[in-house]
Amino acid sequence: MGIALPPLVSRALHQGGGGYGAMMAAFGVGGLPGALLAAAQPEPTGRRVRWLALATAATVIGIAVSPTMPIALPAMAALGVASIWFIASANTLAQLRCAPDMRGRVMSLWGVAMTGTSPITGFGVAAVVEFVGPREGFSVAGIVLGAAAIAGWRALRE
Image (cartoon, rainbow, N blue to C red):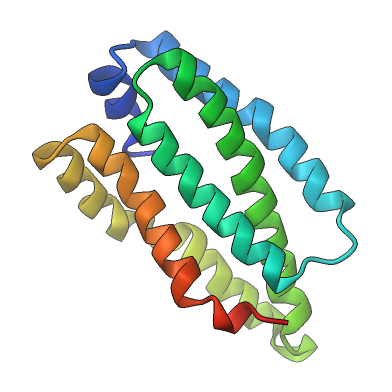
């Protein structure tokens, strides 16, 4: 989202810095209920994590195809809800399902997967944005997340 959102806002939605700020604010507005929903759940389940991953992927793609800002802003708030709830639930599930003596190692791999791959994936997303278009570049994240959720579907069964 970080690399593809500015070109999406400027080139596809025809907005300036204020539009980018509004999109980020909408994400934050959605992120608060997402965090509260994650905190309110008794214990995350593989089923919930699977569906939250697909919901996050769908909202990313929904933002990419949004024709106007008034449609993109609520979609961005929905992304805040889904993605924060998904990330918090998946993080908690990973910690609960691993052996206690492996928890530090598992969480270090989690950190690498969450933020450490950005320099690598960023080049691919930027290339799609540059040579194909901002909507397609933004969609890449949703498509890859959806594919990963489907590929890992059985691994997250109860």
